Length: 463
Ligand SMILES: *Cc1c(COP(=O)(O)O)cnc(C)c1O
Image (cartoon, helix red, strand yellow):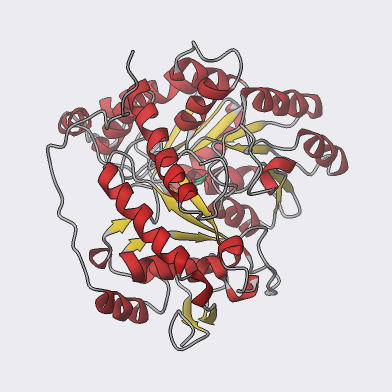
């Protein structure tokens, strides 16, 4: 067969205009947003790579299913379709719909975590960590050693350190209510977790009598990486691989805004009858009746179809290739990033690009402002602003200072990606003139969403 471009496996039938702005307009917008891109108006953004969460395009089949929804309060047909779709992949006994992933986390941790408990994970996502800490628990990150080095090439940098997990379970015996594995490892660079590692975590948890849960937000992307990279899986379908991943766990939390291909929604699924009953009571108290859990019937329909489409090979091949394509262009332009490319996102290594900006002057945050200023591109800091503030109010540098370029699903085309690469190459040329930022005002938790910042120099660049 001739070698060919991996094309978008869809054609566009509905379009949404995006708006060009001038550099002066963007400088003013950035000032008005207090140098926090979360505070920008989306209409001032040209290419929005802030997150892949809830930003995807739905298919004609999803919209069609939504028209067929059943909005009954209890026992709706739409719930049965949703539950069957989740069950068909996870084979977990109890399926609780929630309005998004963090609601599933809150319900799970409120039910299972007591003050002083320890929850190990390959790397906690920010809402996962915040929900555990809100319960007085300790969120323990145990990434594998390759995962701590942004430049190390390794097929499964998202893996949990199995020896460290075993030690933690011994050391904190009786105080670990559950272990989590985040697939793919979002905060660790969107890196996949191997089937061998999931199985290994399962064996260790089984030995210590502790349940294992998946933070399954990107389970389909993780399945694709296993198919591409792990010996023995090349001929297996993504669905089959996903089913095997779930066969090793006792439950999962899920944001359907990621690999549910929906704009809202999530779920908690688990096997333990008694824990499920307590979670369901909590769900009724705060989210809604167990057959809708804070979602409309049409949301449940969109997710049921999305969970099917997300496992299609053409979709996953295109999805993973788009990110890799940008990585190749940035590599050619000598823009430092976490290697290899993640599944849903590319992570720029701001400490390497901006070695003259100290971690507590927020190099990744500064870079996220610069790429908005120069190209109207919005991306998210995964670094010291996001993770540096400790529960006791002190501040320490995060393990890495990254800028995440997250790809909405089925939204942007190859020319959009080409443009992003050009802007980043331009910013890379001007990097040494960038100066850092300081925080002017911040909330006590999850500060990156709402903090107000200011540049240390007159503007982002030294004058
Ligand atoms: C997005 C995300 C969550 C939280 O889901 P929401 O739907 O945003 O509440 C949890 N874990 C991971 C890994 C995520 O990417």
